[in-house]
Amino acid sequence: MISNKIKSLVESPSAGVIRKMFEEGAILKQKYGEDKVFDFSIGNPDLDPPEKVQKAIEKCAKDDSHLCHGYMPNAGYIFAREAMAKKTSLEQGIEIDYTNVIMSVGAAGALNSVLKAILNDGDEVIVPCPYFTEYDHYINNSNGKIVRVQTAEDFSLDVDKIKKSLSEKTAAIIVNSPNNPSGKIYSEENIQDLVNILNEHGMKTNRYPYIICDEPYRAIVYGGKKVAPVFNKYENAVVVTSFAKNLSLPGERIGYICVNPNCKEKKDLVAACIFTTRILGFVNAPAFFQKVISESWDAECDYSLYEKRRNEIIDVMKYAGYEFAIPEGAFYLFVKVPSSWNDDDLAFTNHLKKYNILCAPGSSFCGKGWFRIAYCCSEKTILNSKESFKRAFMEK
Image (tube, rainbow, N blue to C red; front, side, top):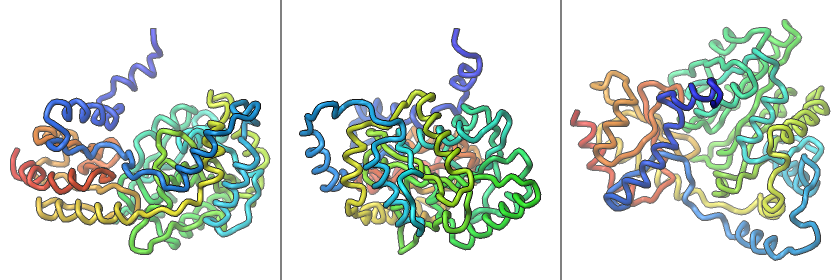
């Protein structure tokens, strides 16, 4: 028999709904043809990796030196950790040493390792809603408790609500900016307000919750926006990230953890994350792509095509009559379900399938009454979906 806990999660109506849609899309494309199916279900970047990455892959593939595919320390190659420390130093505005970095199996592996390292049974993790659907499972994996806090109307952090949700059991808050699914970038002021209440809470309870910065979309921003650094504002901060989105390498599962060097328990936390990386079964990040990314993390990337697609899907939604939040980064459009559907996003996304449109229901992101469009797809898909979205809006 399988675990009762896992069985209940697998059989939940919302379990893996996005992946299921992705798989359903492949079936529909075989049946009707790719040009007649409008698949916006999954954030699978369709831009090719930059040339610098391609060249690094070719170079590293030619390496046939002794033990080139062997184990390295669980934290990763020192040269890879040095490269990631340099990258994070530039982003966070403070000097970071490689000893604060642990290479990981993508951002998901990084986040699971951090949560396993910091959570005692029943500890709470605050998550602003809407949020990436897998956070529930990651927190549950470490016997933590998710505390969902609704964001403001514009999807910025509602600091007053977060303050009311803090308790002596609060271990961390996950901050995903740009946000999946809303595309919101939390402003410098918004982050500083969050830091202020966490410091106030820490002074009262002697427990300063971690800010876990989940940043795989950090580089994909529009209109000159920037993701605010956190390390220069708050000691108990950790970055978890990957190169899945910015360098279009989701299948290679390469990322890293970086602990703020000013964190008072950084040595213990780094040691704990190295240990959890091992015992969760990752053991270490893939050797080959540690080498690749060390040589190509700073590759020049052109995200203007994503911005163009964002503007195109916005035009489609305006034409079809939908309300939506304008994304400041990432490659998702969060769209309001038509009022006639009474916020039933699951029913409406099923309705969209009648028009060969695949979108993720907002309830999967704790965003009831909304649905998510992943516009990291071909322009043809976006432009050709116009009339189908319109018909879906008008008909029931």
